[in-house]
Length: 162
Image (cartoon, rainbow, N blue to C red):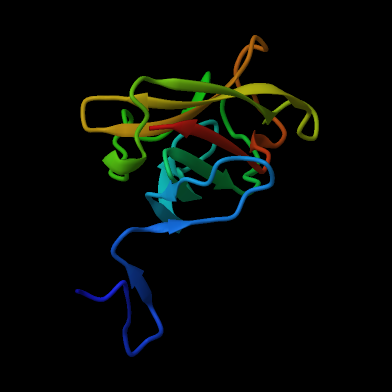
């Protein structure tokens, strides 16, 4: 009979049958995938004098992917209808293991660039382009991101299934 679990010299425990976590009234199931805090830095183009680095951290638990980002609010120097990575020459893409089966869109808050960074509703999108999966933000129905003022994205998160 083989070993039911193993412990390596770093303390990593592995099991042949997986791990089941306790539940409160539910039916336990085997945790089939867990990956935490993979950070990617996207290069965003938008209403600024130059592109901006935008770190996004990804976690995957089972079939759910979580994307988290911090505030990005530099001063706008021009107008732009979208802030995005990928199709505008970006070289960082969402890994396939995190990619949804279809494009996904989420309501988020953005700074629209008007008068000291007015906060308005916007959209976070996970899209597929010629080179892979990328992210973009739009300013929903408010004429895009305009200058002068702060134009960017408030800290937030989104999640989807794979």
